[in-house]
Length: 267
Image (tube, rainbow, N blue to C red; front, side, top):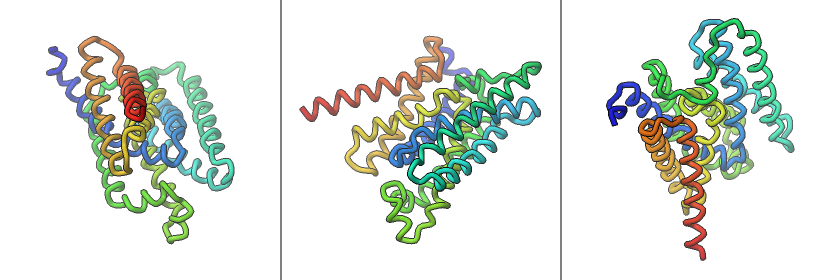
């Protein structure tokens, strides 16, 4: 139990608790808008940015963030171009992200590219700079969601009605994509690029099963994210497990329990 008092574990708890607020919260909007796969897409682009950051000796998370934001603009541009096939935008950008990442990995073979921590997560290696980035992202996301909650609600459930009412739908779509890029770039060192979409989507799936209103969904999605991250970190620390994988498997267990619980109540 000494690990609970270790400084690196306390930093992991702080970073995890912060990202457990923003990722599930933003993921709820993405799931309701049928854009759940955008998490995987921007995560792969972020990894390409991380590899580029190592190559040019610039803070990898910052470079990953820049590329993810650029990709978010690309997704929105393609989504508007292929209105009847919106999922094409996600598939195209994801393919480009994977291709760019593989190319940069090849170029960086002669360098010390520590990308495994970004692929699978390395929350125990969070430093003060990482915590600062995560805290800033949390403040930005919460500030935007609180300030524009009515507009985001209308956009999420009826984009056509939002457009007719005069809401600048295009700019709000870009804003959501940018916020998603921010959250993913801040999350990849916690659960890893390969698992980051789970933190975006599974808490949302749980809350949609359990909740009876949108407001209740927002409360539940954050609560479930916090429980999974904090409890998952504790389990991983005590039993020497992979933190990212433990958190995701715990989220899946919560989802299964939610499905069983609701099925029994209906019967």
